Length: 112
Image 1: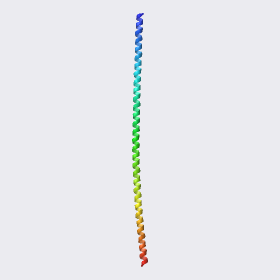
Image 2: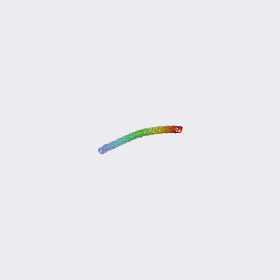
Image 3: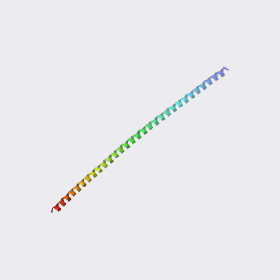
Image 4: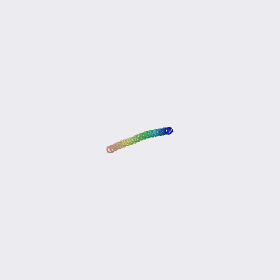
């Protein structure tokens, strides 16, 4: 009977050791899974941050290009307006000279 009890005690201890080993393996696997999940979350956050930064950079470049195009368009419109004003002044001056010439011609014709 002592041998049976001894064998039962040894088997019991062996079973408890196996159970604890299984618990440790499960805990280790759970810890590894948690670590992997944390790495995936960190990688996703980093990728999202990079995407936001890239989008901001593209948006800023687009705004800068739009500002430059607007400035160029305004400058070109200003140049056209200046040329139109100059041409109108020249036409007015020419019309004034023509009117003066006409007056002089009428004076000369009536003076004779």
